[in-house]
Length: 120
Length: 111
Image (tube, rainbow over all chains, first blue to last red):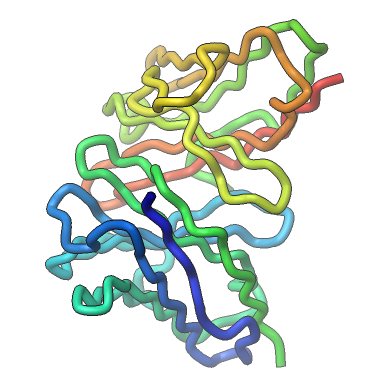
């Protein structure tokens, strides 16, 4: 059974860089059939797609976040990572990682999510 | 403001049917049959309920159905049950530059 697990600091200071890693188990991140993505959800608000990456390193980013986001992949560790720079309180959210089958452009497997708070 | 527009809330009694709308544009919902719906219970990760407008993943009840007309997609839940009370989000492919957009979410209350 495929599992995804987010990890990283739960507290980040304003203007610093938020860094999270998603570890994939029960399946290979190098599969040619899937993208891997990050989605966030501010407290009490809706879902926002951040970006997605293919095992080759090809990426798609939300245009509204593109200038601050970097998503990378480490196939040797079966992990992919998110970096969001120059964070503010508005970036406080639960961050989810998820799998995207290429053909359907959906999120079929999700991590449990991790809350990241931006505060000094 | 979300790219796709959903009603903030809907409600229904057990056994009834409800429909949640998701209105986009000709650049997303109207151009691609790649609309999906997610159910989210409090404190939980979203769960895929419908994909490619009207397809159900294995294990999802056939009480859930999806459709699309023009720039508006819809999720219908028939035979409402207490366990259906949750937030529902639509999502659409929006082309190679924007890629993906979500709706703002709809809170379903089972009375």
